[in-house]
Image (cartoon, rainbow, N blue to C red; front, side, top):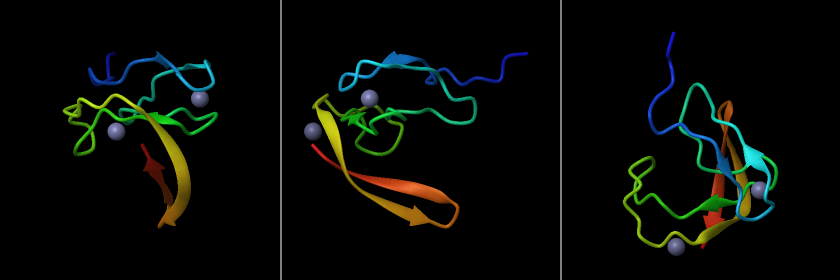
Length: 73
Ligand SMILES: [Zn+2]
Ligand SMILES: [Zn+2]
């Protein structure tokens, strides 16, 4: 049974070159190894940003039971 959403795909991290497998429950856009992300969203998940630069993780905030990563482009 297919429960994946279309946006959820594997990618190779441009910072550490590790292969990142898709998440089942959400579309992932950051690398779980080095936490770097790519500047592709204006609003989360929309992929509307044309910057496409590497986002450097500068701070991690714990928010309830999830983590919010703050980035610098
Ligand atoms: Zn990485
Ligand atoms: Zn940017």
